[in-house]
Amino acid sequence: MRGFFYGFSVKETFLLNDFLTNRDTSNILNSVWLFWLAAEHLSGYGGEKMMTKAFKLTYGTMFNPPEELHSRFDEALEAVKKELGKEHGMILDGQERFAAEKFEDRSPANTNLVLGLFQKGGIQDANDAIAAAKRAFPGWSRTKWQERVSLIRKAAELIDQRIYEMGAIVALEVGKNRMEALGDVAETADLFRYACSQMEANEGYVVEMGRDPIAGYVSVNRSVLRPYGVWLVISPFNFPGALTGGPAAAALVTGNTVVIKPASDTPWTARLIMECLRDAGLPAGVCNYVTGSGSTLGQALIDHPEVGGITFTGSYEVGMKIYRDFAKGPWVRPTILELGGKNPAIVSRHADLEEAAVGIVRSAFGLQGQKCSACSRVFIEAPVYDALVERLVELTRKLVIGDPVERAVNLGPVINRNSYRDYQNFAEELSQAGRILTGGKVLAEGAFARGFFCEPTLVADVPLSHRLWKQEMFVPITTVARVKDLEEAMRFANEVNYGLTAGFYGTPEEAEWFFDHIEAGVNYANRPQGATTGAWPGFQPFGGWKGSGSSGKNAGGVYYLPLYMHEQIRTIVRKA
Image 1 (cartoon, rainbow, N blue to C red):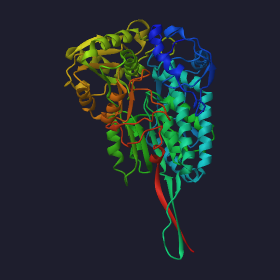
Image 2: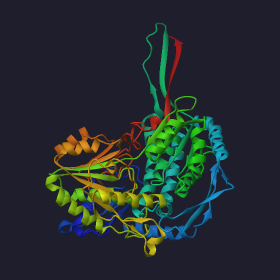
Image 3: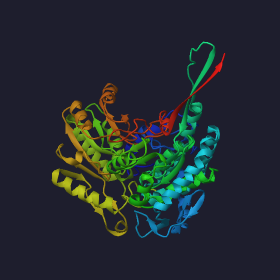
Image 4: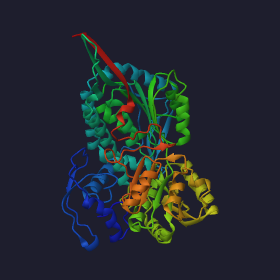
């Protein structure tokens, strides 16, 4: 059985399967949401047979899923298709709310397909959602943290139970292939559980401090992290599960109340996350869900003085505007921003070129390049440049483009017409500046005519002074360059405003040098599962430096939850 790279040869596929077959599964039962015993017969070097193993779905293991995963996805897809076109309300203070104006959620793979009808909320809806969250805050913030943990864990269990339905909807709504769609939902549940485990590991973030040496008195000091209040989560289209649910769970488990505002391209997935939280038993008003335009509803939420903190994931330009607008409030409030990337992969002359090629292609073209962590720049030492580029072209040409719900498909559509036009404009500009190695065109015939399908594109010989070496494109285009040595590669890799992810292929000694010099928050060395992509909570916490992030702490990691709380010192004195 083969996963993401279905068109690859046995030898090529083995490189992707190797991670799963050799992975240490000693911690497989920690935060598991998908668990099977799957007996697989894999073709690899020498025809080795894989032993029965536990399977945990992550972005690193998704290339070789059990057959049950596919059959259950297909069953769920048929059930979801019967629900298409229905109207979905906002959820405020535990109640459905409907607006006078609506908007259609259409599939980017087939724009004739209306997935659902959603509400175009306005300023009053924003005010009411924040008011509901504010009313719920005193009770929720004073709820024992253990009880909050229990409710968030129940929500994670509901995500587990609904994973196939939710995965099918993500594939339809975002255009992710089925494995990446299921991965998005699975990551959401794991982010819920990781937030809970960190709350438990830190015992609610209550710490006994030193005692003042006051003669005749006992002075007891405690440090307590307390929630801010109403927390706003503005989530993007590309990971509508994980990047809605992850920040929401972190805010909720720490005692904040939440207002969720998803991207208008993906309102359905975010609503499913909201339903899991509601059905887990969260009190009314603790978590609220609103939909509508970013320029009206979204801006009203950002400008509201009662918002205590905000988490936004999206473009650098929009994020910086939010940062500046939010700073106009009555005092300084926490702003957690993840603002994209221009992520490099550096390949040494000593690298395993096959692993490098597989990892780069996967990170360049997974989700059609619409990941903030996508590998958009490749710097290759001159002695291996020609051989690696030839292999990158071969692998890219094997990728299957089509309806993302189909099992054999690797690449679905880009999200909307704006991205479709961006791809065309960038491809044209790069064709004039350099040489298109493969791709460079949109697919507009037959079934492709109803969606936003673009060929995965590799471009060479673009001058390193060209603007598109530094500008995030967010489409399936990657540029490659020949460099004389690793120092030159590192200089170009760091000469951008972004610093999210980066990848390296070379010797272990060179990898340590890479880690010491790269300016990025998430870094991988010699990883065929993805040169710059595939972070997972509890394994690779995700966040960026420079223009890629505001907090300096990574989601799904040990330092993330404290971002949603501020410190209070409690001193009580009594006579000895």
